[in-house]
Image 1 (cartoon, rainbow, N blue to C red):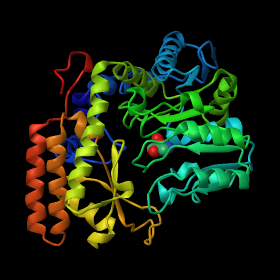
Image 2: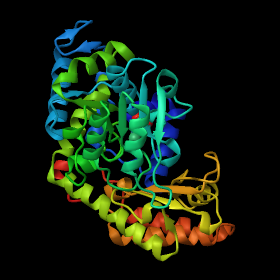
Image 3: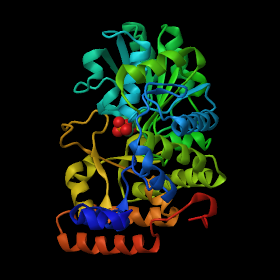
Amino acid sequence: MMNALEQYDPQIYELIRQEQARQSGAIRLIPSENYVSRAVMLASGGCLTNKYAEGYPGHRYYEGQQVTDLIEKIAQDRAKKLFKADHANVQPYSGSVANMAAYAALVEPGGTIMGMSLADGGHLTHGGKVSFTSKFFKSVSYRVNPEAGRIDFDHVRDLAKQHRPKLIISGATAYPREIDFKIFGEIAQEVGAYHISDIAHIAGLVVAGIHKSPVPYADVVSTTTHKTLRGPRGGMLLCKDEHAKKVDRAVFPGLQGGPHMHTMTAIAVAMAEADTPEFVAYAEQVVKNAKALAEKLLEYGFNLVSGGTDNHLILIDLRNKNIPGKKLAKALDRARIVTNYNSIPNDPSPPANPSGLRIGTPAITTRGMKEEQAREIAKLINKVTENIDNESVIEAVGKEALLLCSQFPVPDHFIKNSNGR
Ligand SMILES: *Cc1c(COP(=O)(O)O)cnc(C)c1O
């Protein structure tokens, strides 16, 4: 395929090649990113991109669905098995659209939804001010406890009783601790709200059994497929049978047209990969690596929101280092360590230039790195932090990062016959 591209469009071919080199020559710590397998890559780049399949298996609005119906049913069945859910919708284009569909399925426009505030680690689509979710719905946000950096369930309950939302969203995008979905379910029940759980970040940890699944406690579970789950970019909704029709109709024809069949095909492959002991070992290592990285950062005097991590991500509070998140993220990028600057709870600085840095371990774990390398990475992060205005040190760190990358090449893996890498 790449040969054809090289001949037809050398300019784009060259840019893809450059991006490939960047991904293999950098320590990628953005917690929502990963490396997919060659099998997933092949499926998502295949001929299914040519097919329109509006509707659902057996009820399509175009002919020629002999194969697509089979693929979608396999994807649904694998999702149901993996997440132990009654019903799965594998059509959402992304996590954001999946959330919008879940809200639209359960709440009338203008109804009240309640999620974690963006500033405290919630996702934009949990009712963030600039998101359409706060324009189509009335949005109420719960905060985390500013000292502990953790969800305060008394506060969540009080707010729910005060505002009586139609919908409570659990789940987050920058929260380093395990979330008790059962309590969220109980609070939702107490106020007569639906409970939607958004596990976009931690889906891989949930299917591996490392974090408790929200499926028993939520009306609808929303996820992306490309973060810790390690599939192609996409979204998915899981729900109890009673909500299946409403959820399906909200996705199509409510919000979307034809599903991206090539993505759905690759999602099916990714879910087969996730249903293996190798995947469980990867997910366990993701958490071990994050804990090792966190521990070492604490030794270097970094403050971590909530004091550490239970999952794949770490939120560093940089205020005691007197370096803005953006400045450190940019310096680290020059040293081949790719992160993102991020707000911390109760951040005194604005979101465009916040006080935090968010890092995570899924991608380095997929490369086969273990605790030793995680600690080495903490050392490199500290070196850049301590020499933030010294370009020659930053350049030297970049060389060390490149060496580490060369020892852990991006695996060209088919999970089934992988050698453990
Ligand atoms: C990443 C994320 C999303 C959105 O996913 P996209 O595929 O980027 O639209 C939604 N919710 C949470 C919690 C996320 O972390």
